Every structure is written in C-alpha cells, then in structure tokens.
Length: 211
Image 1 (cartoon, one colour):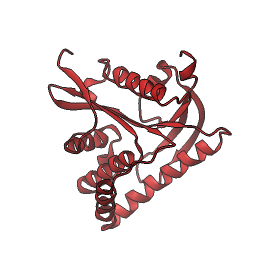
Image 2 (cartoon, helix red, strand yellow):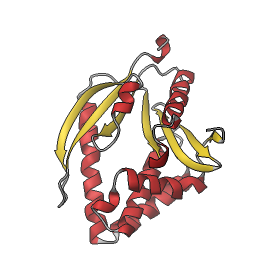
Image 3 (cartoon, helix red, strand yellow):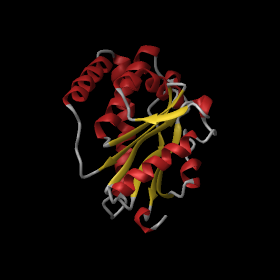
Image 4 (cartoon, helix red, strand yellow):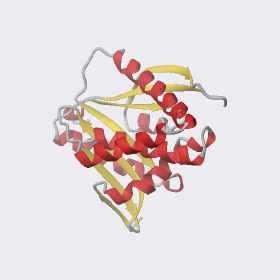
C-alpha cells in the first residue's frame, strides 16, 4: 500500500469510523438505523474521551483504520469532546429503543469491569479502541497500527497494558501480536436475537524488557 499514511485522529474522521463501528459490531442487526448511528457516535466519543494517543491509517487520504491508547496516569478529555458526548447520549436516550440499546451496552461495560476486577495488578496502560475497515483487514494495516501503539507505550515507559474484546471480533489477532488472554466470561445480551457471546480480557506484558 504505497499510498498508506498515518496521522492523529481529527474531528472530520468521525463519520468514517462511526460507519466502521456499525459494521464491525453489527449494530444494525439489533436496532434501527438511527439508533445504530447514535450508538456508534456515543461509542466513538467514549473512546476518544479516554485516549491519550491516537493513530489513524489513511489510504489515499481516506480513513481505513484507527488505534487509541491510554496512559492511565494522564487525563486529557477536552471540553468539546464532553459537550458532543453529552449531546450524543441525550439523542440516544430520547427514544425507547435508544434507551434499551444503551442498557445493553451498559451491561457490556459491567462485564468488562468485572473481568478487570479479577486481576490483582493495576495497569498503567490500555488499548482503548482498535478497528480496521472490513475491506482492508489482512493487509498489514492492523499490524502497523498495533506497532505504533507499542511504540507509544514504550515512550510512556508502560510495560504492561490490557484491552477488552469479544468473540464477535478477530481476537486471534491479539494473540498473534503476543498478547495473552487472562480472563473471559460468557454472557447473553438482553436482546431478542441469538446473542450469547464470550468477552475477553487480554494483556501485553514486558514492553520495557525488549519484547
């Protein structure tokens, strides 16, 4: 990919990544299009509010992948993010379907929190968000983004970090990058469709030890 470039996340990237989120997690399969769009926006903004580092992969200036990391000792959420986040949440909660969908994602957040609580250690870093458009998976874009995340963690002197993922994603990718699955939980989402999923907690160890 000779026309592949990288830069930090910009506001104008939002629509592209909201679309990638909708398709990757199949939001349209369990809620209407408008609620799906609102949920994608809320999810993206939540990730942005947590991150301290972003890298976007662009092919011919079109966003096709993104990674966000967090140094847990830094808090840098800006006022514009908070304002847009509140607006997006309010939009989601205006309808019965929106409130139900928000409840589903709240239950997922609780599963993730409980997975992390099973660990005795406190992590300095987190891989907050990682996604590549369906058409460009398996091309090396994801690996390039992951390497940028590792380099950021090294620059912050963070040796170990974690991430949440689930069985709807290509979680094997993380294992190929040297991450270890350290906790998992099966959970049935409160939806009308078949929805039992496995939720995973992965850890990357020993960045500062030459890994």
